[in-house]
Length: 289
Image (cartoon, rainbow, N blue to C red; front, side):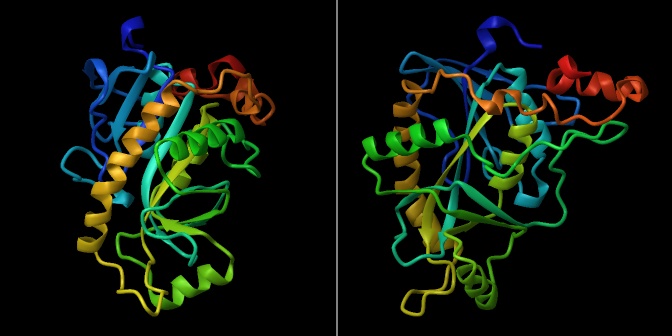
């Protein structure tokens, strides 16, 4: 556990281009151990607009970790250890819709999973839980995040579907057009596992998807490449930081169904739960076990 000064209400996972929050005050760095291994990096804690915030660079400082190498469970568990109740995931995405221009922000409300080699649950090893996930983001936090992004100067698209692909390669043209035929809005490589784990951890979760390109479907635009994305990322990072600063003073305070997601989700006979599993899940599900 952490001491009272090393705790935060709002957690932010920063994606490509967002590796710190420059306006944080009373900053401290905390390296955590979790029952699920090592997080991507140290957590940076500080005060922003009167709210304690915990920030984690998703890919590590220096962008060292592939999407498939991320320890999503440790990253989210660490936020829970720090007392976080609301988790915002910021990430770069490709646009699958003409109207979502590079530089625009999308706050999606749905996901499609196209990953295949990732751990996206805290459960197993003797405990089975099935959380509701029909609405995978917290409506209250998503609305607050969209409002904060607009106040920060962004063009915001509320709602839409985020396709989460394995990567690290970008889409083929056939895949990009397939996702468009599904009426998906954006494509990225990270946020779905964070959403699933946040729900199991009973955290309110929302995504701030920063459009950097048109993937490879757009006939009149250059095919996506890392160099062109990096140029847009620089502007997006500043916008994301302003958005987080605005959101920090408007974190929803109402009770929410997200905060009780495990109440009826665990189906395992409690008397059969192995001691080691019970210990590992203490912070996530201890009150239900």
